[in-house]
Amino acid sequence: MATTNVLGTVYETLLCSPGMNEAIKLDLKLSRKAVLLLNSLIQNGLENDSEGKELLAFIPGEDKEELRAFVDECLKKAGLKELNEKMKGLVSK
Image 1: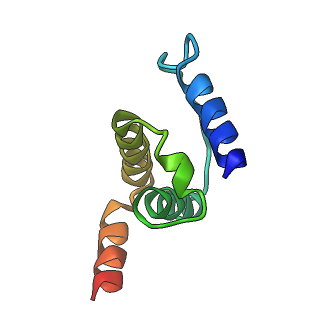
Image 2: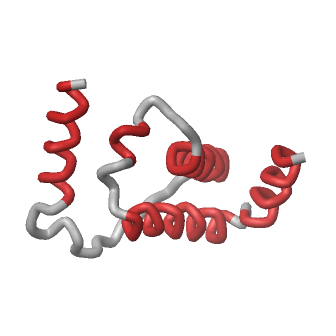
């Protein structure tokens, strides 16, 4: 439990450091497979009970939304938005 508190303090400190809210431009070249997997990993990490859940408590809601928007944009650029929606439909059935 003490490790979680220390790690949480470190994350809080890093997230509020000067310059952390500045936008950066990334020039990425990823395979469609990597985009789809990245989307799944981020969505599962943000929505499900995972081992790192205690760290999620330190992430502000707007940062979570920024991550969701990022993976959504990656899906759109890769042409995988519709495929991802259909895959989500299969999981929920």
